[in-house]
Length: 551
Image (cartoon, rainbow, N blue to C red; front, side, top):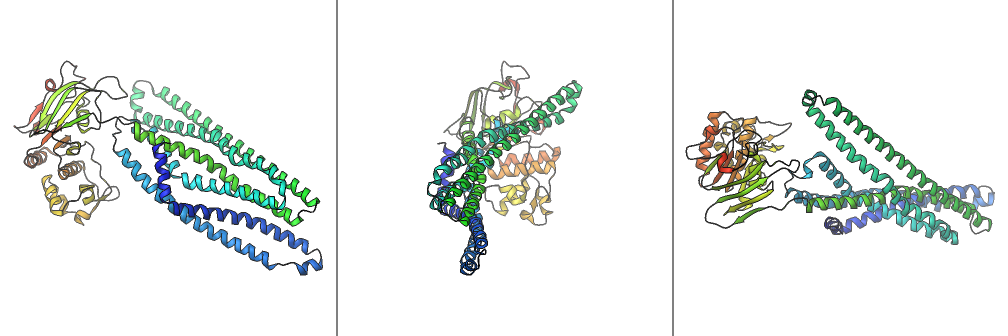
């Protein structure tokens, strides 16, 4: 059994009291509803038969059946409320832990070069998470209720007609076990294919809209639109097939249940003719059969969903456990912080051309290194290799004295979280207001901060106060300052900041980060100090073309 499947059931077992109570209340609710239908039918038919004669009308007890009907109605209402409360509570407790552990595991990996970094894979992942989280509520609970109600139904009808279970058992087995399996294979699998086709169609449409000018320029727009139309037609056909298959399966289920009603009627009439049961009892058994069938029809989808959720957990487990590459950076103890790069090469999975080819260099603290080159020459890729977000195709990265936690990266794109300024600065850490104010002073955001109505408790993000491009860059620098790593990787840290302000900020950071190893990727080398070192093409790569060099 896959690890994540075991973990799900382990979390469910930890909530066994609430989960078991939910199963019992769901069963009580279903049984009450079935019994209410059967008893009401018997009560109406028995009352009608008793009214045919004066003696029968006077001797018939109207109060006990009426009390039973009211009791079952109240039990069904209370059971449904309690079942919703307990099953949803158990589900939320399980998925809150499962989501925290699952996304925590996924967050450990870098997905920049992995399949999760595209729409198809991420959409598939979210669909799997939805099916996995609904395993208890949408599969186990209705499936358990269906199985138990079917068993109790056989026992109940056998009390009135002893040998009837021989005739009813085959149809029940087909409806309870075979039809869910058939539904899963004929309906759910085509729907899964349809989901993938729709995701691919969405990706193709997005790519078409983003590259419409280029496609028109190279006279490929008509061809691309025809491909998109063909993909849409294929998806529409798959949707029709899935819908048709669902209708066929449900029709077959209805046919099997109709056979079950006919068997019940046939055996009931035989028992009535032999005097084993009364006419009101036969009507009650027929209504009892119809009530159980309603539960079975609901359960057909639930048992099929169990297979869907189980498969989803297996796929997520494989994704979280096997798809990410092992960190190939080597960390060793030493007296000084040094990064030694030997024969480092890298190419993205989608491309065969090396963007970094046999790089050799040594970077040591306390120094600032500036990497300058045109866009597309691998500067950002080199920083991500140092950070561990990407793994080398060949070569070694040896980092002395520092650990993985002591390497910090300021990316090109700074994300603004919808939350307070304190939350955006501290992230998962704790800092005093004095420390935060000093950090804002270093990146020259103190005047902007003084304009905020609630200070560090002022909300930022979409729908709240937004920041300009330069202010976002300063916020990113402030986050890195608060993290206080030993090795700092800055990817275009001054983009969007005017040159005078950028020079002042970098001058302050030179003093603040004294003794650290700082590596900057920038298009503007004029901001470097006389003590900074420039990494030229010859220093990093030898024997490769200009296109393949990273800087």
